[in-house]
Amino acid sequence: MRKSYPTKDRYSYGYAGLEWTLGSSSKPSLEWVNPVAMMYDELYDEALRKEVAALKGRVTNVENAVNDLKKDSDGDGVADQFDKCPNTPAGTVVDGSGCAIVFPKAAEATPTASADAYSNIQFEFDSSVLRTSSYPVLDATSADLRASGAKVELDGFASSEGTAAHNLALSKDRANSVKTYLVNSGVDAKKIKVKAYGETMPIADNSTEEGRVLNRRVQFKK
Image (cartoon, rainbow, N blue to C red; front, side, top):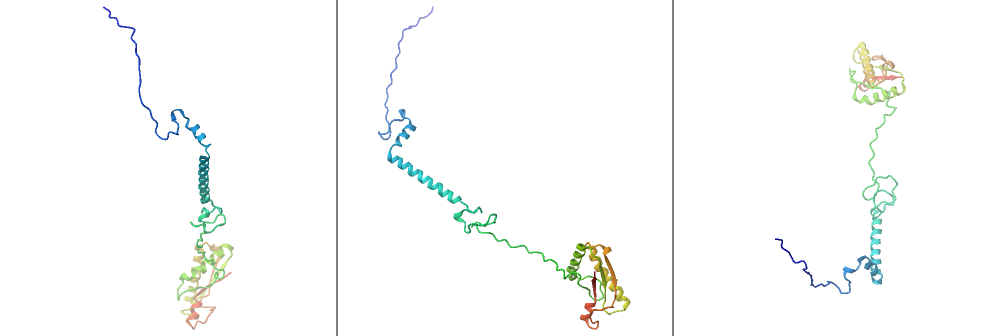
């Protein structure tokens, strides 16, 4: 058996509550006020406009101060306010205070004087071994010969100690020592001629040690 239900029920609803606003009663409720529109309305207030203008002035002053801090008139990377050496030339390397850094100059290599080239090469007693003190003269001579392509004659000599035959051989060995040095430094061997004179043609007195030292030599002849 089908059960029937009543179809003419009636329903109704009722609400009750309280509402209050916090803050000043002079401010309208935001429920029905456009805040952006209200802000523009408030700008019509003279005092508020002055306050906004003063705020803009302070912001402008801050911006100007920042721009002044960044200002670099000479472009050296140091702001004018901290630049102790203004108007440095473009490209100058400066320190943190804006002053040019003076770098120590590199020591320049002393060029071998041309007067050193072709000077006599001296030897120890009864020796054909080159002295290290002779290297600068030999280097200068080598540089000149390589640059000019000139030919040179090496004349070997000895002091008067020992036999004439021994001194002749010794003087030749001395000239060949100089030739070997020059060839090893790049001089063409074909442009070097060697002659030996032994104890002949001294340039100083062989009776003194000072004179004999000067006679133990190789001379250059161009």
